[in-house]
Image (tube, rainbow over all chains, first blue to last red; front, side, top):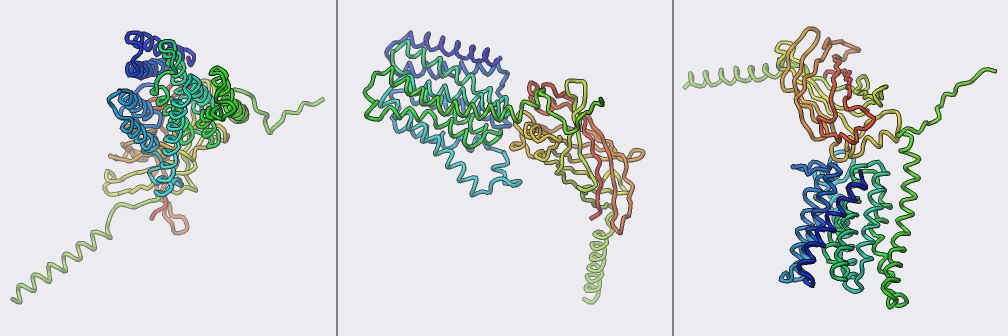
Length: 304
Length: 194
């Protein structure tokens, strides 16, 4: 089913981008809009296959991701892609979204209600600010790198992280939350490749923006509502920043394919480690629940 | 003038007596949920061949029993979902996740009565049952209610069982998997008079 959802999401987004962008080649605004709408459609189809429905009012973190965060990210990237919109306005919109996403996702939860042994007001404010700053920083740094040294490797690095996030969140026991990452990963890779086919460029900033927001949100939900550890979540979130390594003087002027491959290999290393840790924890904690027989404290003794 | 003061003084005295009397002669007895002598447990089918048992270790509640006007009796119960205990820590952690109880989003399961009537051997209580962010009207048949004086403390106890479909309360049908949709909840609660 997960492969089916990924296939549907990838197929729909790629076909849409190829069809739309093929109509007006060379227009950056048109390509950006095609990518935004293609990703939106791809995600809608992927989530439909996974039976993840839009619920209103949204009652949990995943509902709020699907009904508020994803449409908001798509809307902002659509607006930001128009030439008439000043760059500072586009970035102000992006940073506003980055600042509010943690608050949106934690709405109504024990973290903000002040009940139980969870956060007090000061702790909640600090955590929201740190998480917002983390998202804004990641978004800004990847966009900067994308302008400085463009290439498909950056959205592909986000794809690797999103795919790894889905598997890790699932192995930590939150199946629905992990599954939500697969259509995102599929649309990321399909839109990037389709845009590349049309323009021979690395695609549109929208792909990066939606990818970063999606990755952050799913890891955030996995961390605060599921059992994903802070270390694993941070490793997966920050792994795409390893693409910056190729900006060192030694590597910067190498051939583009070499730089791109190196970026992906560097990003993949921490992700493989995270997956190995997640698999070990899964085998230890979850496998017995799925039918593996555990030895009993009481042994049967046979006579003779 | 003297007559005016007499009437005023009489009104004040009668008013004070009525107010004080109204407070002290309340027919309803208030009880607090006694966690030590109570339990909220549940069981659900596994693969439709056996039962998995569990309990909630942290429960709060109060009830007010009006012996003269039983319809005025009220019952409230709050269960902390984080305290789920099925004698397997890994499974408990799994049950706390968003695919099941989603304890960070829905930290409690609550019941609050809205209508009470007496039946033979107890009460039939209609109320709002909130679980996983969904509130539904349910009827609890509370059996018991006899008061017992133990070392100077008055106690009363009730027992009830109810069957719920988890899918009715917004639990993900796909995550229900090998654990049956229907869960049987057993509540045995003892109240200590305040």
